[in-house]
Length: 307
Image (cartoon, rainbow, N blue to C red; front, side):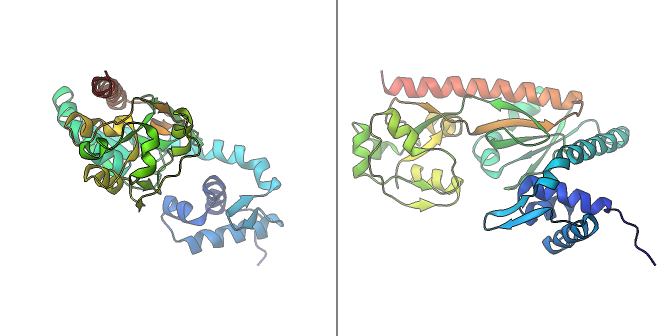
């Protein structure tokens, strides 16, 4: 039997996802299969196409020129299919259920403290949180929106910045007593958050100390890094909005008045091309209002210390 010379739909989907993520793992998670299955789909597509579609490099899978030439069409096609599926399923879905995908740190350090406010303002909408450390496909029909951390440049996503991405050091009040100027950071522990995209070199350059040598504990979990700062184990470079809760309650203080701004921060994200239902628009409006109030409170706390 002669095999029909076309690339199967599942293989095309695997190509698009691997090209987007640069690795088999995230694509496998999005498809609900194993990385081995994704690898087989790629080999099948390459066999059918008669040419290599990825370069295998130490940094991951890099699309070849041939694949890059059709990625736009693939993304457009799959976005349209996801939108059609969402529209077909919309009538049967609970219009009062809002599903938000959010990172663990944002959920535990910021959002959880404000959910009572959401419930008071919109008791008619039930909120469901999908907390995860990986990116969830926003084209899924069971996901309304997401809160993501990064530069806001995700493919197929409409991203609206949440807050101003203000960055400054924080530490326990007792440790702050040993800090009269940024140069003193060379003589106290500085917490290195391995997972953070925030830049100590940028902040040090802003205060005229670009060559200052920092040392201290290295922590791979951002929530634990903040707990370490509260416990007095070192100075942590933090996103202002994430430090607000600790600043308001005196768990941490901002030992210096200098604030920098990072291109990395939190974003309200939705699938490109999807019409937002009323429940999603309500959540976005509430979220931005809460964030504005949070930033105002943070600025006041920092300013009071440095008057």
